[in-house]
Image 1 (tube, rainbow, N blue to C red):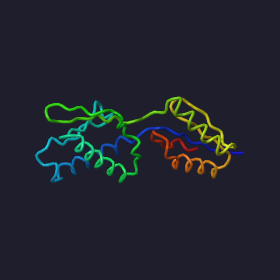
Image 2: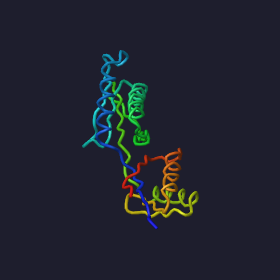
Image 3: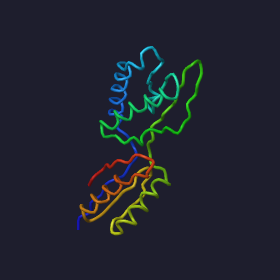
Image 4: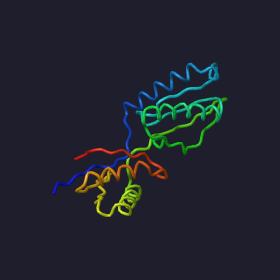
Length: 165
């Protein structure tokens, strides 16, 4: 019997994030309520996140809303943004660093394997570094697992599927 598999990983497409960045910059430049303000979006070191600058927290939130809209338009999960860091204010400017979440640690992988095992006992899961390998003899079961994981709203990290076999 043939075995089929795929990997669940937590990563983002760098090219798509580049497009999101460019589109957000264009919208920030064209918005009337941002004219004459320090509203700005920059890359964090080596494109691992965004640095958002604005007049105050309200402007930071407005810029992050623009970024979220651009992410949604490109079918990228908003969970990729780590907005847990506080903003800092100095010289009448507020800045916030928003790194991207990537990589499954052991705890996140265990949450995924338990979720899959509880719902689909016939499907085998295996933690392999920063990925979870899901294996089954039925492609339908694998598609059902994908639907289950995509539909799980309380996961606080983005998931994507790779390595279909």
